[in-house]
Amino acid sequence: MGTDKETKINIMNSIKIESQILIRRCKLNDLEGVIEVNERELPEDYPYFFYKSILDNFPEAFLVATDKDNKVIGYVMWRVEQIPSMDSLKYVNKGHLVSIAVSQEYRRRGIGTTLLSNSISAVKKHKITELVLEVRVSNYIAIKLYEKFNLKMNSVKKNYYRDGENAYYMVRNADTN
Ligand code: ACO
Ligand code: ZN
Image (cartoon, rainbow, N blue to C red):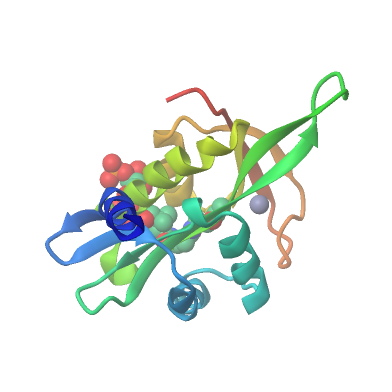
């Protein structure tokens, strides 16, 4: 029984992009590959325990794209943050896109879009009110991708990155499509 259920979940959660590329949930032994992609494609690096804690806490929205050899070629990860509601009487959940990247040689094939759309559906299950993220103001391509998902620039975070670059803070109501 348990095995049946697990198979179903795996089938539902793995999506074929091209014959060889699969999108599925990240597993513990994928983390090394995720870190490799991150270090190659983004200047913001995190220690292993950071990835591990995201995987432990928000596994359903931590997805990887893999090639024919099951090698990680892309990933997306979110965390859910509790913030005081407008009247401060209770907390609401906000889905924060921590990081997304696709290996250079696999870009522009819809992998980023598929990672994002499926992880958004997954993170929404945490009853969140908003989706939020920061992106470098110079990162035109990523901004384009986020705009496809109706994320809108909300404000600028000055000096957000270690090298001094500003970030756009982009926000979307969780119920918007
Ligand atoms: N020029 C212009 N727009 C582009 C380009 C390009 N070269 N490549 C992608 N886009 C935009 C387009 O709007 C595209 O949609 P379209 O194909 O319908 O026009 C959209 O991005 C998505 O394209 P995908 O093929 O689905 O995305 P891809 O698999 O190439 O991944 C990603 C996009 C993840 C941004 C990739 O370029 C990447 O890894 N960049 C480096 C890492 C990075 O900057 N990550 C985001 C940091 S911010 C954060 O993580 C919160
Ligand atoms: Zn952030």
